[in-house]
Length: 208
Image (cartoon, rainbow, N blue to C red; front, side, top):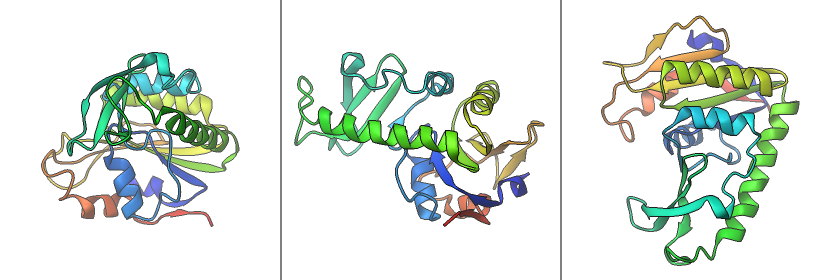
């Protein structure tokens, strides 16, 4: 089934889960620019389907935000959009902001809106897109596949990765041509699975 991913794409985007898809796309030369969900935490995949279906309406608007803590290094505030259950993990440095006053918000929102506009433009115009998501359930992945089928004008592939595997890359056949689902082992996902991602993304290329 991974052979269905092979070939050229006009653009490749992470649909989150957490930072790992962006990291791996970068390592494999498939991330020439950032997407709106890069470096964000989104545990509820159904909310990503809703976000795309609503074309990011009111996403990360200031009235929906709340500071929930710090990132692992303590360098940034975790700032959640409570309406979509999506958290900006590395966007609000503690050196520039406080938990009561997000001084860098205007710059953040300008950058985010530019990334949203780019993604929506690619949804409308690109001949072939690759979207990558880590985490969620089978039902939620199929739901997102259906939303993408409605929102993406031309061809796309959706690589869905979960961590229920036992060894190596386990391909899961769910019977949907544009949804490629795989299971990876849950151990050492941040530093020990580069080879598995290289295998999955083998012969995936950006159209130049």
